[in-house]
Length: 125
Image 1 (spheres, rainbow, N blue to C red):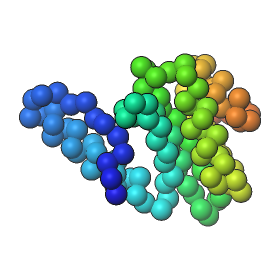
Image 2 (image 1 turned 90 degrees about the vertical axis):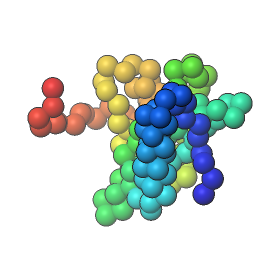
Image 3 (image 1 turned 180 degrees about the horizontal axis):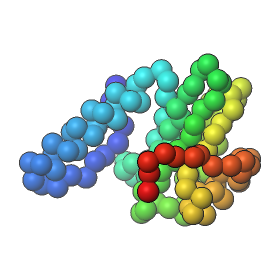
């Protein structure tokens, strides 16, 4: 597998260790069969990605989208989300974002998602 994104790390040794550790963990996560991830680039730089955690027993994919601040407002989140949903058309998708994130909620709605409720969390502030 080729490296799929660019990580800007500090010039310090600690920054490089953190970046390498992140890339190792990210690559291991992405290569598993319970995850589907797509990356979008602009001029060779990672602009954003979408990840779907697949629960094959329940036939549900929980989706999260991230677009780097520098690339927001260009429709990348919608393109990523639409592409992910097209990749596995016969599952139920659960879009995950904070309700305060209006842009993310609007992206999900523009792709056909309907607000049904929220997660209930224990032990979080």
